[in-house]
Amino acid sequence: MAFDFTNIKAKGKLNGGLSSFSSLPAEDDTIKITPIPIDMIDPYTESLHPFKSYTVDKIDELAESIKVNGLLQPIIVSRKSDGRYMIIAGHNRFRACQKNNMDTIDAVVRNELTATQRKLMMVDTNLEQRHKLTAKERALAYKIKQDCLKELGATNPTAVIAKENGESRKSVQRYIAISRLTPELLDMVDTDRIKLSVGVTVSAVDTETQNSLSEYLISEGEKATVDEKQAKEIQLEATIVKLNTSTFEKYGLKGKTASEISDILEKALQNYFENEQEIE
Image (tube, rainbow, N blue to C red; front, side):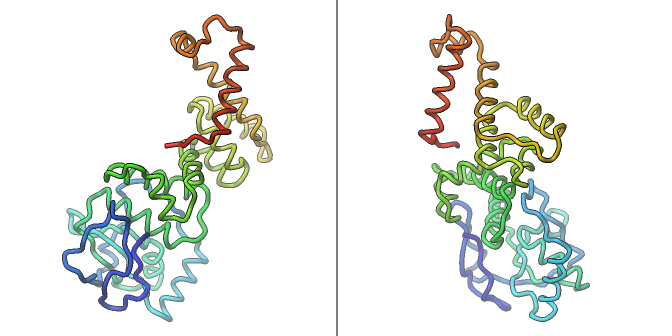
């Protein structure tokens, strides 16, 4: 869960919190909201920010709401070494306030958080507040969250993500899998040119093979795609190409014909997908 500031007006208690892996107590038990000059605030830059900015129309709508109702939720920032502030959560609210030509914006300053905790808070607050995420946004966010939780000592980060985001573990694993796709292929999953299940299969092959696939699809035009059967064939072929002598010996493939090896690997892949092994 991310922080919930919905009912905070000027000063109040913390209503919600991040997981125990990421949250630290504030300097006291009261959340202080401070007006900060807008020209002293910079975007989050410590790592990839996987979430898309609102469209111009949506920012206009948010700006109008702030004019009428005020800023109902303060942004979250941390102070940088140069004295300026970096946004942890609230980029779209910040843009809307800029559009309204406001001099200051209400903010909660969280200087006690580590870089990993700031990154996790950035992801968690967006996962909590955004109800319509694309496959790409969710994939990259879950991957960042998985890495952060591992750094913070979680022994089963996939289960934590699933519980905190109302997903099954299998669904979380599939999204994390497609985060390993090349940018071009991940964009194709994001626009539904490639189905999510196909993206999961293709994510298991090497970058070179993924690049070849994306180049082919681009060259064939916008309607070109790949189905699940073709994806498994690509994965099978990539696996065979990458096998070396020691691997052949390890799996008892030495001396087998290409056809026999293909049959063995195809059955192994089929077993893999049927058993739905975890992707970590």
